[in-house]
Each structure stands twice: as C-alpha cells, then as structure tokens.
Length: 541
Image (cartoon, rainbow, N blue to C red; front, side):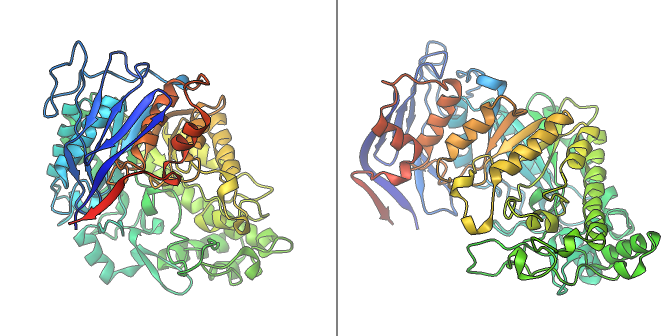
C-alpha cells in the first residue's frame, strides 16, 4: 500500500514559512540559519518501502555560489550551519536497516535525497549501524563490507560527516540476526547466551561471561570482536578522519552497556516492571560460585537472589527490592549486587579497551552507549538499574565507576533519553529521567568524559525538542554531539519535519524576538501533531 499526502496547508513558525503542497512542502528557511540566501523545496518522491507514508522531497539550494546546484549533484559546498551555542554538533541516525541482510543499500533513493536535505538544513553528519550479522554473516573471518562502503560513499559525496556504530547484537525490529555461524554454535552450546531464572535465553547477544572463553570455534568473543574491528579499520581507512569522525562499539543488548534485564515483559503492562537478573547461564554461575567461595560464603554462590520479583512486577511485590528491610540492604544483597555490577563493568572495560587500542592510530573518537534506566529511580533501591547491572541506590553512586572506566579508556559516553522529562512519566513508576541524567552527567564531568546525546524516539515525546535543547545548551552539560534518532518516513512527514527544522534553527538562535514566535504559532512549533491540518487527506492506492 502506498499512501500520499494530498492538499495544501500553511503554518508560520517564527520567520520560517512552511507550506505542504501537492505531495510535499516548501520551506523558506530563516536567512539567519544559513550564511547565504537559500530555499529548500520538497517535491521529489521519497518512498520508504516498509512504511505507509510516501513523502516527496526535492532539495534545491539557491544562492550566489550554488544557484545551479541540482538534486543529483554534490552538495558539499552548500551553506553550513553556524556553530550553535555550546559547540554542539548535530547528527541524524539513518534507518537501522539502511544496509540489508543481503549487504545492499535499502531504499537507496530515499536515503540519498534525505541526506541532501539534511545537508541543506545544516546538519553536521549522520550515524548508521554496522551489523555483525551482516558484515560477518556466513563464516568467521569472512567479511563483506560492500553495502556499508557504498553507503559511506553516498554520505561522503553529500559532504556530511559520519559516525559508525559497530553492533555485536541482533535486532528484532527490523529483524537482523547474529551471524549464522554464531547462532549455529549457540544451538550446540546454549551457555554462550544470557539466561534468566526460568531458564529462558536471550539470543540477541552473547553473554559477557563468555568474553574470554574459546567458545567460538576455538576463539574467544573478544578475539572475534577485535578481528572484526581490525578488518573494519582496514576496509574503511580511506574514510577515516575525513568522513568518518567517530566509532561506537556495541557493549550489550541494543548496543548498550547493560544486562538484558527487561527483554521479557508481560504484554499489556503500561508501567514497566523491575526486570530480572541475568546470571543463570553456566558461565555466569561459575563466576558467581568462584566469587562466593573466595569470600568464604560458598552458599551465596549457588544462584541469584531467590526473593527477587519477575520482569513485570513492581519493587514491593517481593522482598528483595522492598523500600525498608529489603534483601538489597543486607550483606548478601551487597555481595551479589557488587559482583553482578562488577561483571558488567569488566565487560565494558574489555570492549572499550579493545576499541580504543584498535583505533588509537586513527583520527576518530571512540564511544560506547550507557542506558538511561530511569524507572523506579525515586525508590530507595533503584530496582531497574540494579537488574540492568548498575549498583546505584539511594545511598550509593553507581555511575562513578562507569564514568571512570570510560575516562580510563579515553572514550565518549553516548547517553539516550535527552528528550525525556519527569512530568510526562507515569507517576506509578517512580521515574525520574531528569535526575538520572543529571547524576550520570555529573559523574562524566568529574572524570573528564565527554557525552554524546541521543533522543529516546523519533515519534516524539511531549515538549521533547524543548527538553533536548535545554540539555544541550545547559551550562554544566559536557555534551559536544547530539544524534537525533532516526531517519525514516515519519521523520520527513509534515507532522514532524517542520518541528525538526525549527529545532535546528533554535539551536542557532536560542533567543527569539516576540514578533518572531507568537503564542498561537509557538503551539504549532512545539506540538504539530496536536494541531489540525486543514485540507490534508490520506489517500491509499
């Protein structure tokens, strides 16, 4: 099914005129946003095959130096965005499936046109994931970088910078599996995967307990990751420093430094549960047993906490996370949580050290991602953080050691959730993304770790752009780069793209005159989805 936007409507956002016309829209951007007079007209079809929306986009820059520029041409000389307050660079993530499992660029024409539009808006660069299950799909050491090299060339031609995320995990949506040969090994040796208390396995990444074990045809996962990174560096050396400015290495589920503690929630629950400890694969239990015996308490090493809740339950549904007198406050609780978190920190240290040493002779920065586990932050135990591997409670700062580890390896920390605010979180979840973000930021500042920010979802959250801007331009925020996730049909839709455009403009012009943004127009800028769009029809073909 193909859906087109038909009709015409206009809205004025500050001095930016937006008009949706005939399957597209024209945007006469504020001249202060670009050094030269520019006009962006959107009229060429961008079709995202897996989405229901077809957006039309045509980018033409009209200025003294680029008047003859066409969509198919190189736009590397188009006007650049002036550096915003605080020096924060702005990137946009490409679709997760930008390179298919067959190692070809998917929806290539849409991506190419979208990149040129981002360049004309003044975006600094883009990010896209490099999947282990695609680049080393068939056999260990057999690499195919063709799709990723082709995409990097497209980005280079447009004149954008590039951050590449090396992903050693799988994805459910879109469906991208681990390498076939790794999955085959897992069928014979299931202990390479994380396992929960009920024996359910998480097969979308390898258990950190297998890092240094020769479980992959005689090699350790760390050795395999190292060889992957070395092959990547060699294959992409022509782009290093000129186009590729940053590399992030996957540290766990969804690329984040954490256990897959929330991978099996019950359906129909609006309030997130506390998750479950993931320490029941054979190798994790062996580590726990050895640790308990070394401390003279062998009975503590037989299993994880017996009184912890299930995935979807609240902290007070069982004894371990109770506010007062819970097991987490006992000597046993401290023993287990210290061990559990130390395993995660050691895993992160191994991978960041691997990446840092591999790319030390290249002019790129290295980063890793830390999650924002903000549910139950206002409770005493911080249960969601504990099951995810962060020993952070009301009386213990668990992120100092994380920031210290990033600093020791000279790596940046990627933090998501910069669009989240406390007021829009479910009251029952005792959540506080603002407080948690402030705590992690303070730890990074103390240890000299730079932060690269991300938003939580492209679909948007209430007043999300306003929150992002506050986090980026705050006096104490060590944020030098922000990546907006992620490009796709909704990103370029009339509901969303004008707000994104206004967000870019506002980073350069944080202070507006009253005649720039009247009250009724401010509402359109902040929440375009809440305003009726006259004469806008959706036509299915």
